[in-house]
Length: 126
Image 1 (tube, rainbow, N blue to C red):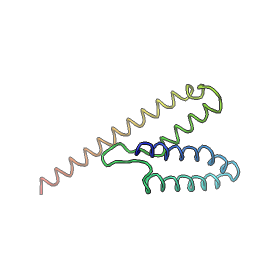
Image 2: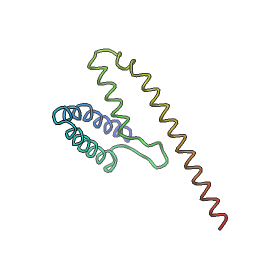
Image 3: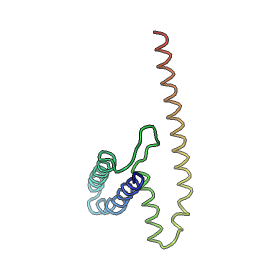
Image 4: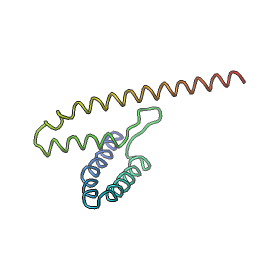
């Protein structure tokens, strides 16, 4: 059930971002985009993370709404086009984004390891 909540919570966020944000920005310009971003992301973050629709266990990989938004945006274009051409043309971007995420994760892990080693060294010297 916890995984179903994660799928539903992130899918709802994706549908609102892909369906509403652009309409607000188109109708009201930059202010509409900011308002939509604040409203959509704020409400969805509250529901998904504060209330707990999205399952984030301690020590596990963090699941965020961006994953659902990315999937919703990619699949929406495929459904609107009636083919998988939009998905195939976005593969290079997806590969680059995944590589960036892996690089960021490795970098964050190395920094965290360095900070912990520094704290251990300071504790031993006291």
